[in-house]
Image (cartoon, rainbow, N blue to C red):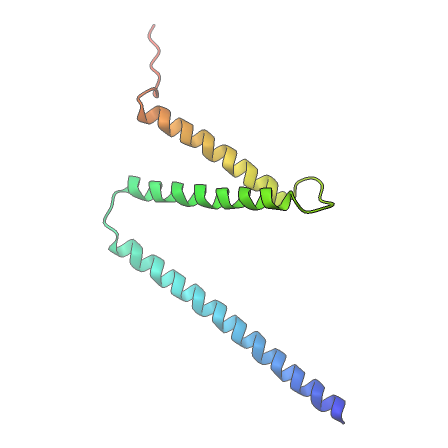
Length: 116
């Protein structure tokens, strides 16, 4: 009998924990959605400012991914790149290419006008 009582207690604890975790996740998602919608309604900048913020976010996450990639290189018996690591490297390379393109446009190198 003690085993079934313990199993019932563990089962109810597991169900309660799952419910709390799902409610916590849902509350955080709703809060993040509310904050992002409020920020979008309050923000009065130009579209270019929003693109600059997105650039910073992309570079920030790509840099964090590359730093974690470099840290994982020190693990023994690891060979090759996982899909996530390869994706992080590709994102950084594409971001650097796009940043270079943006800088060339900023310094009036682009658009290149060819004359006949």
